[in-house]
Image (cartoon, rainbow, N blue to C red; front, side):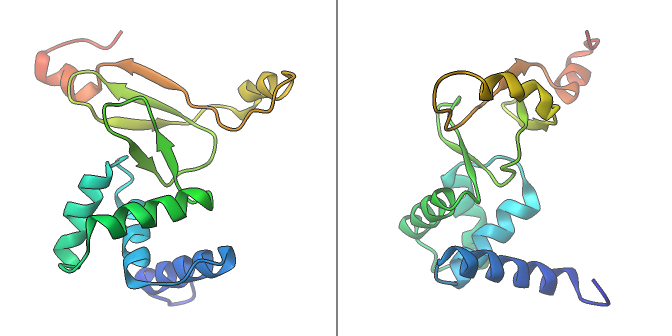
Length: 149
């Protein structure tokens, strides 16, 4: 980064992403992108709203939903649909998700893209692939005194 502060680099990266896609650069969009990129905890829109609003008190829920939709339409975020509420993921590269059935946390799991080759050979137009693995995370197992199997 040649002496550039990470926040400045991230800001430039977000501005470039938005401009390249034709989206208007707004402080709200920048802050929501920064939040998703920093925490990567697959938040709901409500969680994004609550957390970003601490930094931007004038932020509205409508702005959060509209921003998420714009980011989704430009492939900057994925929507995770296997939950009671939609969750959002800034990691759009092919990967699976491990969902803890006890605490509800969602973890990214890298999978070899070669596993996806079979999907590209089916005679249909695949628009999205979502893979969820459900179980108990190591933190919950430790609390329960469980052993990983």
